[in-house]
Image (tube, rainbow, N blue to C red):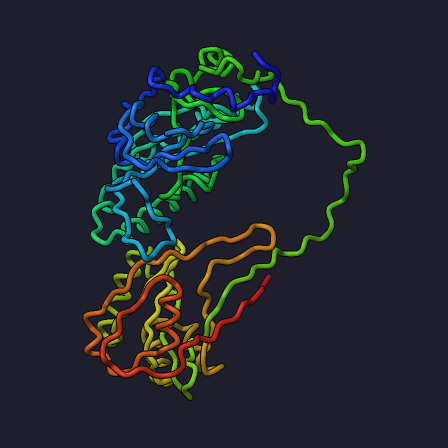
Length: 432
């Protein structure tokens, strides 16, 4: 067996051949999942065909040399050429199911840290037993520094929502709520995996391109036993790196401990747009985040639609960051009337801002941290309540129609007149 860090993924050329068998039996319908892999050239590729077994997966590989092979945690009506989440021009894909997957990694690569990861996995599995809405499927050794725990979601209502975008948002929201509970309970899981319906996870039965160890399904009986007792049963490539008992971290002679200084709060930047309709004196569009008290995105949208009907607002666009929902009614509404509507509906921040400044600045993007990067990207939901356009007496706001289109939700306006200029008033703000 090679020395640590000596695995060369080039040895995988021709490794996944027709006589190499991968067990797909743990998947209900492999053909409904997307398969992706990283090649020897470090480029990612997606399967151009449906995959049902090892033979069709090998055909999908074609002439590429895969070093790491993954499968989507979601199943789709059509997993081939799956559009990206921010692609609003293509038809929304039909989400059929989504595994609940927890990823536990404890670096560096060693038997000692694997034992720590194993104990974390055992505790999480015990904790999940109290969640009757989720059924345990299996657990895998990732091939490197940890484990993946898979569960089936027994709550099927959200997968029956007719609107595909609302369906996916509902699933994401449900996963975020579960993930928040898991994290609050002290389980060290990767927070980027569980709630992401477009996430991929390493395919059991394939080689980890950095270690040469196989991603392997293990039994709960194995998971309950110390790692060193069954680690030799794990499959690995002939040239896989050796897993050391302990991994020493070298310290630089020039590294000195420093007393912590005052740490400034991270600055957050975001994009905001004005409710004011440019080119008019006293008109604004209704643009606001729905109150948290309205509930999850799906519930909030339903309440918003009642509100739209009550006030004859016409077509309204909705987005979500997974937790809250942003609505935009692109109508040029007289300021005093919008204040009354905002007051009756509980949009007190919007009411106060318009009374004070004659318009309001509303965030229309995720927040960009100077250290953490983008957080809370907005996901388009849909344009709804279009059937009430004929009841609306206010002209369209040209600038806010353009804004909706720029944000991925083009609104088909009727023959009603339009007001104002086309370009919305936008600014970038930075706050602590």
